[in-house]
Length: 195
Image 1 (cartoon, helix red, strand yellow):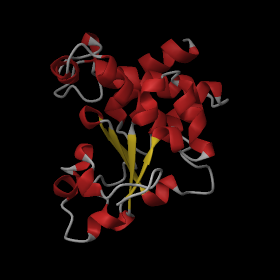
Image 2 (tube, rainbow, N blue to C red):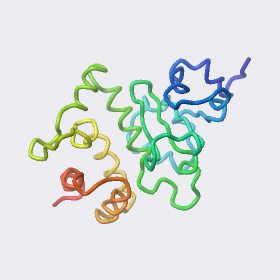
Image 3 (cartoon, rainbow, N blue to C red):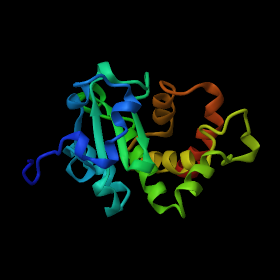
Image 4 (cartoon, helix red, strand yellow):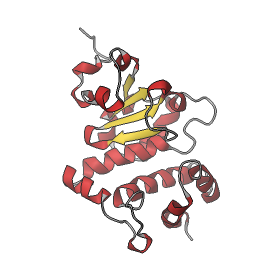
């Protein structure tokens, strides 16, 4: 029996019932995952949450995944907006020097916000299959889709408010994305920083 304020065992949390399967965890590994609500994030992350001005995000679950269980490669975070869940790599989340300098948590919370504000789960999913900018069409709709457009725009607005220059943002993105993605990012940066 868990007391008020203590995390519940993962198996008792319906939004996390598929987490073990999704991460391909062995018996016992799921207990190594730490959970917290967005409203309970450590101080350095609160500004990102607050920048979205949306109390609905307070209840989003953040799952801090030990590095040896992380399955997303170099990408340090992922949202599963349909489950109001954000996964974040433990070493990235706990970094002392420049914690989340590129504001991935803001990006993932924006995905959850977009999902919660969508007409339906199907509308959110459909927007991932559309191009945000027809003139930038490529073989794939990632990242050039309305869902990513919304999340990256919120992330870039936050970074600008924190004093990051457009050039600094582009440099940080270079660690995670390929050259062919930068026309998309430049259009979004134009909307945030001006041309």
